Amino acid sequence: MQFHVAQLLKEHTGAVRRFQMNEPIRQLSAEDMTIEAPLTGEVSLMRDTDGILVTGHLETEVSVPCARCLEPVTVPVEMELEEQYYPTIDVETGHKIPVPEDADSDTRIDSHHILDITELVRQSLLLAVPLAPVHPEGCEPVPTSMDDADEPATDPRWAALSALRDKDSETSSDKLS
Ligand SMILES: [Zn+2]
Image 1: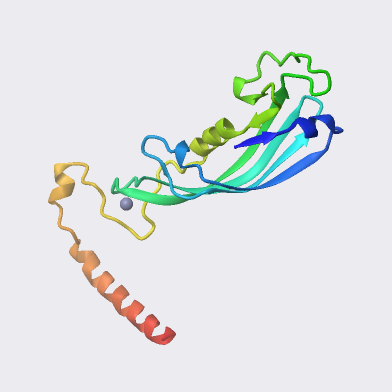
Image 2: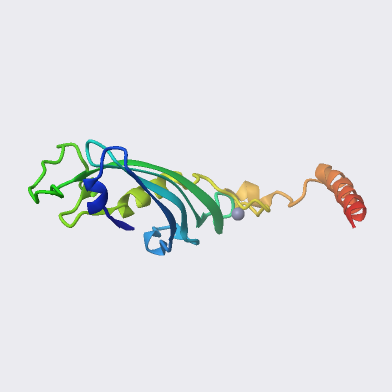
């Protein structure tokens, strides 16, 4: 996910470029996390006094182990990007520009004026993935101890209630059809 920003660097502070994203990012999959959809959304690059400010709202889908049954569950992920990028070469003169000491190496625009947001997206994605997702349609919990495994699958006190609930849902589906 690279942008050639030589032209933008020549423009006045506040100049903006917007990009609609539709990027396959399966290569950003990690251990226990598979990316299931392209990265979509919008990224804005704004010329500011330090270089270029990247902001954006991006979405994708990942599959991760369900917190209940440990089988993969696919969940939507949304990310807000905001990162300052710094030029390393003056686009007009070709002279080196000192980069702030505390600037991450991933936030440097390279000598060919390429700004790469891959690392920003990778880190944002890891932070945005839900911590303990579960299958929304329900699933069987993995037994955590022998006691749990020995318990009857359905508590008799619940049997009557669930029978009632089944009857209810039949009635409502009749109404719908
Ligand atoms: Zn599950």
